[in-house]
Length: 329
Image 1 (cartoon, rainbow, N blue to C red):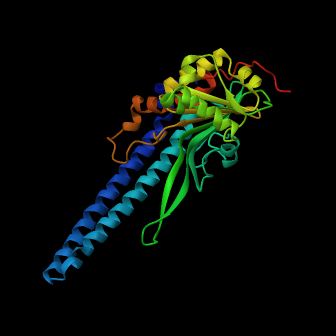
Image 2: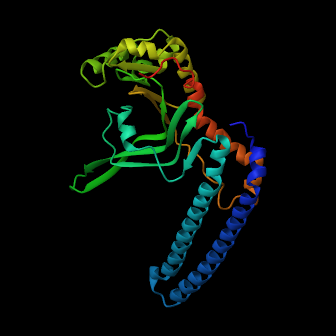
Image 3: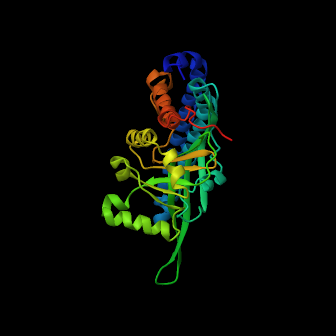
């Protein structure tokens, strides 16, 4: 993780120049297809207009625009795949030699379910993800990816017509890391929306929710006021929860949440910590197909990807996972 973007640029320059040439060729091809599509579609529309066929005169121009859209999507997708396979995989390796990148894979759905971070939401009807990274950082094995889970909501209008609407359960970075302790219970650290809005009444609602079985175990109070404003803790083993959530760990979770500037959820289950960071930022994407020439050869561009990798993998350092407090039995 010590390699600088400038050093990486020096190593990757031959590959970057090669795919930059491919990008320029794709842009040129797209420009040619766009030009001829507009010319032919426009001429055919003009010819049809002379025969006074009404709105049908615009059909050739509409087909031309459709062709342009399809060609652009194809070229942009090819460029995106080329970048992720040939550049991002190398960048991840330079960032840390023990990490491997798979652009089209995602965290397994069974890990998402095991985490219980969204156990009160409907099961996802659509489960998608990308940019999967796995490996070992010092002593900690880690898996993460971007993830987008949704469920389908069906409704009917006054005429009985069926309507479908997709509702997002989670979108962001999902992380699974070794905590190096076999937990006896389940401990969840969730965003506290009730208390922040309703104060003491909100805390009573949280306690009631646990008693009614909507959360595992019971509500566990922590001594840190800032942590209590940001999070609520439920655990089937309150004593174990307090061993996990030491004052030092609590401060690290608060600092991690403040640095990420996003909603953060954590769970401690089996021997792993699961972290879900809600964000709509799309990580590890290439510059635009129409980006300025040689943008990939700018050290600032590679530095941006290094910052995204640092953020995605920060959970190891921020939660101090490489410091072994316990030993697995």
